[in-house]
Length: 171
Image (cartoon, rainbow, N blue to C red):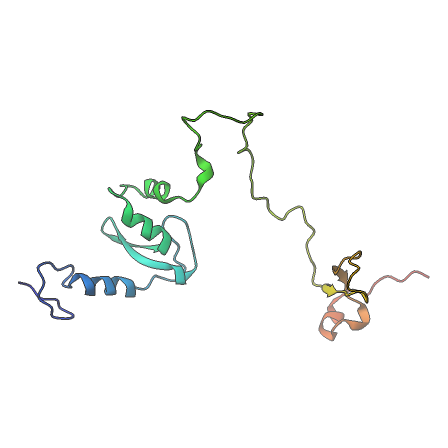
């Protein structure tokens, strides 16, 4: 009966010279490379990534995708099929197939990008600050509590005052 190279336990099956417990600890301790991304969902945060053996090679995957990979039987042969299998995008396919459409107005709801960007909003410049105004009477909230205003030139720090252009004065 073979023994584990790490803990020297006598076991019936070894994986890379280790028992299954030592092998699992070895896998969990494997670091991922710098700038690594999840193979399927492109997650970049290193604390969520781990090295996973996929088709004989070690690939970085996040814990969520790696957990879903363990439940797949059989594992898809291509990376594209693997991405499709563990995708969290629920809006790609219609989940109502085979069921009658009970809506009054039957129109397609999944048109366009649902998560809009911030292109419609003006950019906040360095000369602006966020100022909180609190009224004397806390019961009245008629005016805005938070506003973005231009920094007063007299209060501008010396480093910003030297680089900022002088405002035009009207006489």
